Image 1: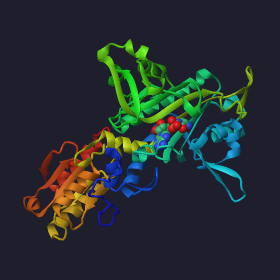
Image 2: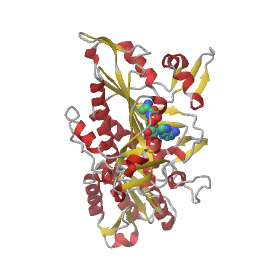
Image 3: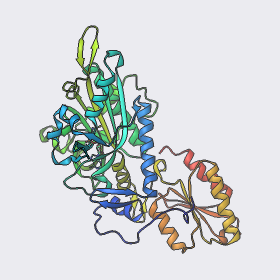
Image 4: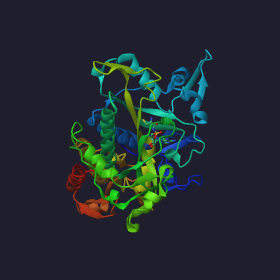
Length: 445
Ligand code: 5CA
């Protein structure tokens, strides 16, 4: 992409109404624009990151054996009356009427709809187990939308739903998602820790929130320090094999969100191992048994058990929230520093003198070679000052930069800069291309 053709409305000033660094940087880097409280347009740069995050989430769901589908944003009130949640959900639900005066709502989550779909098509234990997911916009009329996309009213969620014959089978599905989540966040360079959590309006009695530690996090969390040292299980984990030991390894340690925190239990941890910190909830998993299948008649027949309601769980990831969470984790005074796996473009090419024959030829050639290698370069071909180019490129946080100017070219050199370390090296244009390709091939995140 050539910057002259792209749409990157960056801001020089830090917007006064943005309280935390990720919200400030998303506005300054031209990633989002606020349309109403908690409702955002995703501008091209922001959308590219959102899609990268979404794709990692999708790949790890697929790897864990979940099957993708898509349910609508608008749901009928009737469906929610079946579970009893239409009245219970309260002011967070955006209720709307259609032209026939039918009561509708903008879905805050999809337990009812998926249970109804399951009940419609599945009647036998042979249909089990099932893990279905979608990635869809949700609306929750939050009392205090804030921190930009971190607590929005309209937000993108991945939600998976599991259907099993027994509680034991359902726990295996729960473990599948638990393990998939550890890998999903690790692929983005994030360390997310499972912590015991309250079940709230989703219901049930078993739930973990996945928390990334961050100064500006909304949640207060408490855990054993040793939990923080455990590495992600790795992408070669066998999802049909023993997942319980991976889950047990993590749940052996005390880790709780504020709502379920137990001071007495926490006090039993040696003092130097007690961590109390702030965090961002990037995902949550729930097991809620037959809470929805019972009233909504999602039953299967089994030769020995007869007709039984299925055991269910649901598993959410805040896809749009993660974009803010990533910036909280990866930034410095100059701007964002994207991990390579989620960067909107892999590399920036900065032309120090557009219009100069040798500079244009070198930039064009580097641009083409990187594209041919399957990397996405953003080529700053605009006629702005070098200083403005450097600060814009640092602000938007592409992991690597190639700086091309007539002075260097006269000696056969361009400059390659690593955004995270600030390290700069002089290389020939071909070496620079090879170097960038290498960095991306060998990067785990
Ligand atoms: N149905 C279940 C799981 S499928 C559910 O709705 N779970 S949830 O309420 O915990 O939401 C799932 C994830 O969505 C949360 O972990 C969080 O990362 C994200 N999320 C929730 N509310 C918001 C919000 N207002 N803005 C941005 N992300 C949110």
